[in-house]
Image 1 (tube, rainbow, N blue to C red):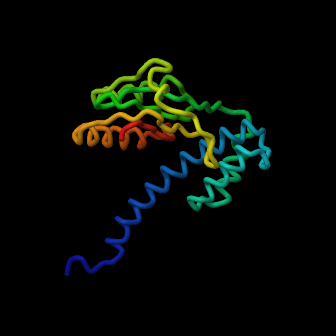
Image 2: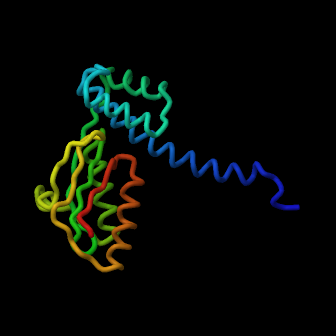
Image 3: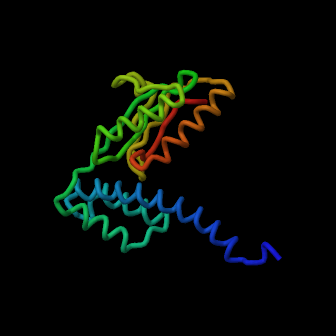
Length: 179
């Protein structure tokens, strides 16, 4: 009679979806916090408005949004946005956008993940030349204007690297110039 308890099956699926939702919510809360500090709590500021819209698009409860804005307006630890540049498998240029309260911890985490996959951080401007900054409704985006062709094995390695980077709480987005 095994397999007849529906809750046993549902709870595993629920745990997976809840963990994915939690990661997305925590990244958006950090983003709202930075924008709220820049706007000094003014909900009508364009940056904060776009952050709130982004939160609503992923069905974040309004209580969580208000709590994030209120927490950001209190004097506490300072969150900063940092872009790291790297070269991945096959010489693919990468820009890694982060939002952190500890530069040192985040840099070490990213260095560790990159070295684990045979990559390393690059100097300032050494990978960003392959990208253009575009301002969209969602915020600042890096769009590649020079593409790099790679083999299938390098693309698989890049996909694993990007997945591990995005699992890090401080990493907001990873941009590559892979075709």
